[in-house]
Image (cartoon, rainbow, N blue to C red; front, side, top):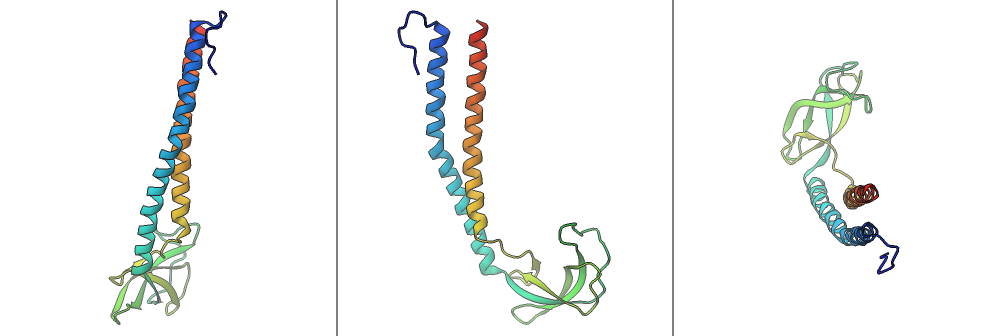
Length: 164
């Protein structure tokens, strides 16, 4: 990928060939860095997921009122709304507050909830596979970002060389 000392090769051909070699080297050298970055993301997410798994636990809340048909905190995906409820924590304390419940759920209905170490309602712990997904996504996207930048630089120089 280098024109060498061929008599028909222009100076711009040599510049373009040298840049192509540099771009390929940068792309190859960026791959281990991207993999390392993805590994760090995986380790960070895995630590958070492990913390969630050890500090969150399932419980059952009993609704104190009917759930509204819709609310300010409802989501179209789950159709859940914040509703007043009572639940018992792991250390047998009775607590009250708002929990997500299906729209139009009736008072007295049992609703599954997840609680943190303080007995407050939280989202369920993430699946361990989310750490792998995050790590792979960060590695792939960071490497593709480097490839895209290399492609832009190479394309810009190619156009510049053609205009000279």
